[in-house]
Length: 145
Image (cartoon, rainbow, N blue to C red; front, top):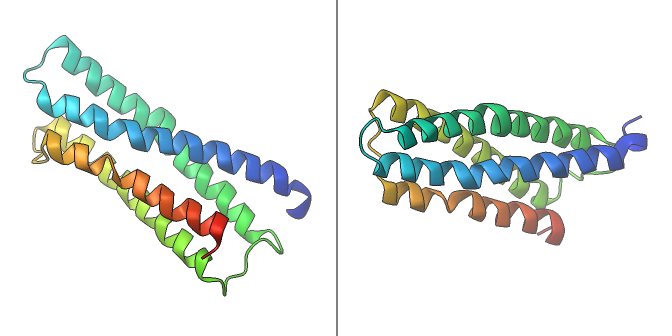
């Protein structure tokens, strides 16, 4: 049954990944602006709303659908050889990306509570994490190392 839907599942998986990655690239940048803006100004309130909508409306559903379609792909007969190292490298990258997503969600709560100790510079550096993980995941899948 899954084999018949393989291309559809794969297409929706790719679209989900793109949406998730867009959020993972953008949310840390919003946090930079949030941390570097002082006081409860109107732009700061706008940033809080943007962060919340990005995480709740785009990133969370995109992560869930990425996992859902990815698991369906993994369950499709003949798609994965679990003895191949690239499968485990990709899985490690996905787990790390999911952990980064959760870290970003936690940082949002800290920013709202005023308890964040992460600086704008540190958020800028963390903004590179999804890029590194994307490189690992894509090379794992395409090159199959």
